[in-house]
Length: 141
Image 1 (spheres, helix red, strand yellow):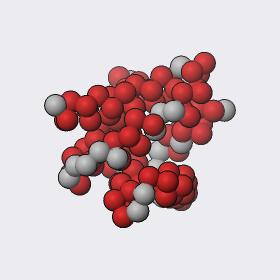
Image 2 (image 1 turned 90 degrees about the vertical axis):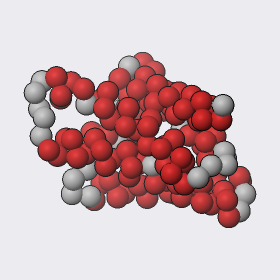
Image 3 (image 1 turned 30 degrees about the vertical axis):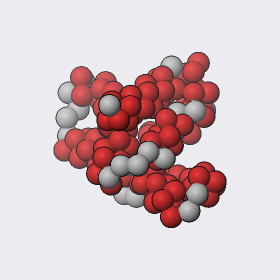
Image 4 (image 1 turned 180 degrees about the vertical axis):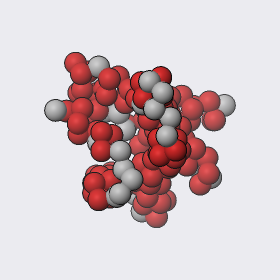
């Protein structure tokens, strides 16, 4: 029963991210898109189950947001590798938050999460194989 709840939160996060990204009128949903994932941080589970709970929504987000590239025939190795690796990289702030939560408290985890996420955005900016159109801040413009 617990796994169903984790998947439910993962799918909810993916849906909110897709709605906020694709429908410009719903951009404000970006401000609550990570709440289901932050709830998963507080669930006791193994590292790999946590990783999958964070990987699934980002995999769905990248897959559906790049669906037009696949349909147009743009099937390069970089796109496929990016679709498989970027969700893992975007899961890092949540895994670090889970580690912070286990070592300290909810308050410290919530204070540390923006720093973890900002570090991810900086890495995404300087990383050579990043997809620059996947900064969530672009949905706010």
